Amino acid sequence: MKTEPSTIGVHYDACYERHDTGPGHPESAVRYRTLREALTRLPPEFIRFAGRKATVEEVQLAHAVYYPDVVYRDVLELADRLRTGDTAISAESYDVALEATGAVLAAVDAVMRGEMTRAFCAVRPPGHHATAELGMGFCIFNHVAIAANYLRKNYDVKRIAIIDWDVHHGNGTEAIFDEDPDVFSFSLHEQGGYPHTGAADYHGSGAGVGTTLNIPLPRGSGGDLAIAKWDEAAGPALDEFGPEFVLISAGFDARKDEPISGLRWEDETFATLTRRVVALAEKHAAGRIVSVLEGGYNPDGLASAALAHVHALK
Image (cartoon, rainbow, N blue to C red; front, side):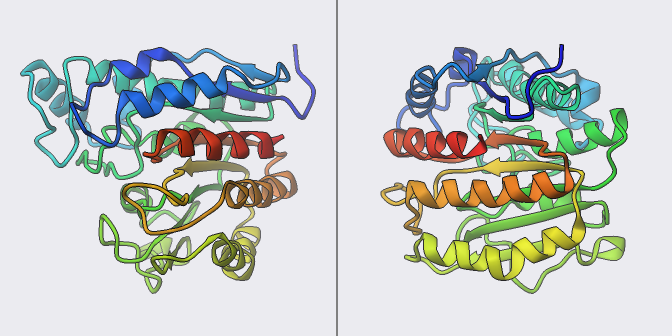
């Protein structure tokens, strides 16, 4: 049965706390638990939906055929980190990462079936730094990249926008779609930070020139500048592109008081950006948005900013 157009789905699950990054790691189960508990207090009009486990074949939609096996073997051998980069892992990390990707794909299916208009997926580990062949930057599988290719494989959707406002450049997503003219990769991030990519003068390569947009923001800047840059550059470019579906890499580590960030956004910054994206999606994509948690390492700040984002999806 089709629900009303403004239905917002929210996914969260304690299973993601099984991914153990070790003592003192910023991307911890503690920060996730704080967010999960906050999401349980959302009013009933926000509908919680169940996830599922992604298949290896689904992961391979955006990753090299051999890459899932690399992750599986590293986890099986009880390695502390992925061999491909700076991502801490534990005995259950492979399964948890598949659950995270699967939840995003479940959200895509629900939105495309009209069961909800928009969705927020609170999952971990994050994904936007993972390239086709490398897990890095706390990330194992690139959930939004897999979702974009899943959409194109399974539905009549050709043009997809991926909007990334994590404080760190979404290098993995950009690399996966570097030459793809049908996926617009936009990243709003802190200049000069990890992973030291995302220059403003890079716009993609080959057939994909023009569908990559990076807006680095100076350290110490606040949300007003981010909104101004959206209105000046990102909004018009995305409007011209005309996406049929919008995916958000929703990091909340650009918020003030973050331990590994130099930006100073308020909760209202995230709400304002969300409303801008909703307007874009309403114009071009029948309102369809799936938002996926990325960073955010001050637990209370993460919960506060994420709630502002979820409410603005309405």
